[in-house]
Amino acid sequence: MPAERAPDLAALARRLDIALERETHSHDAGALETVFATALLLEFPAGTHAMRLLNLGHPPPYLVRGTDTGTVGGTEPGLPLGLGHLCRGFPAVAEVAFERDSVLIMVTDGVTEARNRTGDFYDPQRHLPRLAPFSAAHAAAGAVLADVKRWTDGPQADDRAILAVRRDASGPPRE
Image (cartoon, rainbow, N blue to C red; front, side, top):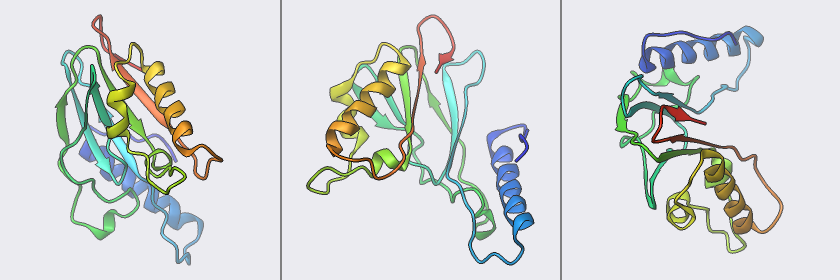
């Protein structure tokens, strides 16, 4: 799929949704299965200590400030990309403060659906305060991955991806 450009996150979501539907239908016009993808679209406006996000069916991101942890976004996620034809639009873009020394942690459902031996799901919001604070983004991602591995204490049943972004005191967000 070619890269898409748009003036804002809502317009980008519309273009990606249309592109995914177009790509799906161009391969097999008779397909009965709908292809979709969850997405978390983020924007870090230059010169601000804010971020904008649009959640399309993805697990919510977590914002860590020191040992304080919360989910980001506030509203229910929209439908995943490729399913835009089932709704009248996308949820509102959320704007959230992203202050210095904060870490934004994004995980796939392979993290939130990881189970321990008793069948309990891994809850990043519950575990992050114990793992924090984080001095670097890679330290945050590594700590979460190691904690999920300890939690499951066994073979991996689903793929896991963790992306962390930290706003340093000295400048813009860094991965």
